[in-house]
Each structure stands twice: as structure tokens, then as C-alpha cells.
Image (cartoon, rainbow, N blue to C red; front, side, top):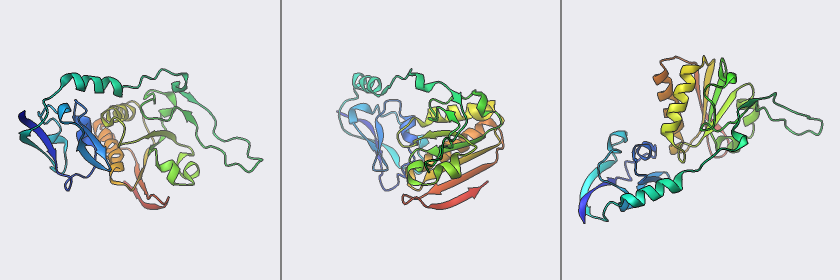
Length: 231
């Protein structure tokens, strides 16, 4: 049938992922760092994603495509939900480090959980804390991540490419609003899609109305710090 549907200009797309969060039908995914319409039947053609695109890469066109399938959209939403009620999500604080007699490098982690979706924004250890918000790949790329970034900080990790950025925005806004943080450090990878974690932190800080000392560190895929900016 001929109907309205979105079209994404791959040359203009910067892989920020904002359109993914704006699409209530889940019709868009990041593929190799670019936003792609993954199925014509998932797109309702209303264009909620258009105003979120910072580069103007998305437009509405009219062409012969599959009909919008609301039932297929609902099935996708159900499949995408991953319930979590495990004991491992319980918030707790502890003393980092351990026995180093063997020469092993001790962990510097001082709280649990660390995944941003699971972090309790009202956990007592957040008050007055130095908060680290890190792209989850960064800890694998940078060899001294525990020593240089985790030590003496509360940790929140996430993936701006694969996770729900809107949920991150809401969680971080609550964290910034409800707690008097001493500082915020954001560690991201050099890859373009990783910039989403910086944008969501800055947006949450603006939403909270607070001015918090803020540092952004960018790491390349070879594990080198290529940029370290203090705001």
C-alpha cells in the first residue's frame, strides 16, 4: 500500500540514537553506528522521531510499503522487555579492595549495583558523592580503569547505543535533583554513538537546575585517553 513512512539519510545520520527513544513503536535501531528503519510494518509514519534528530537526517516520504502492523509492534515490545527481580539488584555499599598479597590488583568498586537502570537514585551513598557515569565498554578498553576512575567514586555504567536513553535521562535527573553531588565524571569511548551518554548527563544536569563540577574523558579503542575536559 502507498502511505507515509520515515526515510533516514545515512550520510546525515550521526548515530546519536535520539530517534530510537522517540519512536514508540521500536521501528528504528542503530546498525553499524547509523539509525536504520528495521521494518516497514513497525513504522506508523507519524514522525515522532523527526524533531529529535539533531542533523535533519529523518524525513517523511510517501511510497509503496507494507501496511503498519500494530500487532507486530506489540509483539516486539513484549519480546524486548527483560524482567529483573533478582537479589543482585539490591543496593549495598562496601569497602573496596582486598587481599593483595598475591600481587592481584584489588577492586576499587565501593557499591552495588553499578548498572544505571538498576541504581537506586535515593541510595544513601549518593549524597555528597563523586559520581562516575561511564560507557560500559570503557572499563574494558582502559587498563587502569579501577585505579584512575572507579576509586573513591560511585559508579553508574550504561550503553547509550543499546539501552533506553529516556530512562537514563529520568534516572540521572532524579539522582542530580535528590542528591548534593560533589562532582560528575563521564567516561565515554571515541565511537560516535557513545556521545549519547554525554548528552544525557548534560540534559539531566540542566533538568536538575544544579551546577555540578563536571569532567568528560574520551578513550579510544586502543585504550588511550585522547581528551580530558573539565567544565
